[in-house]
Image (cartoon, rainbow, N blue to C red; front, side, top):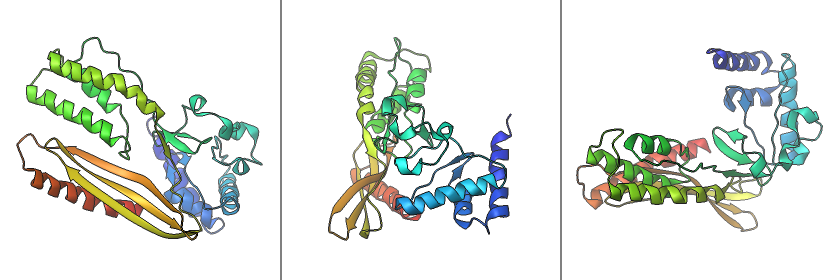
Length: 275
């Protein structure tokens, strides 16, 4: 049914309106941390997070709804829930939980980290159409794979410069370049991105550090968080990155570096507002 996502979202809005006085914490989650019919929420400690979980359950049950398919990195947050509602999700190793995604990105509760599942590309004859299709499947909204995806973007630009038809066989040099790229792609499955940035109640300060750079082929920007705890421990985590290929028309390196800096000045406010 094409309108089912609309109904799911509309029900959430009505839930918030009807129960926000009785369950203010849960109502806030339903209002701002819901994607269609999925809830994504966390907390700084187990006690407050369990209280929020119970609040969510009560809010949903007030309208005859039942929250199911619970996943958590803590077994305590699953304790007390019906077995059929979570199925010991925390104990599932990454290889067996490949179907669980958070907004399109694989998340493994057992190690509390994000992973990438990259399928091998099998193309006996590489064309511009098949390469564009394969590259579009490299879903990486946060730019964690930016050093890899930018290589694919540059290759696509080369194909456009060649003015090849969509189904025309690639020249031998570009075909070899694509083959080399594809043979290394499965290695991305070994990459693990920790979900937690080490920001908690004992955090003394949070710093946002951004870097930008450019070459004749591309330019990029990346943002890291630097968390300093009260005990003096420091944790640096990659948050987000953006890349763009250089324009076809030749542009000087200093000019491209200014574009990279502009990209960074737009990325940092987005990160700050999100945090």
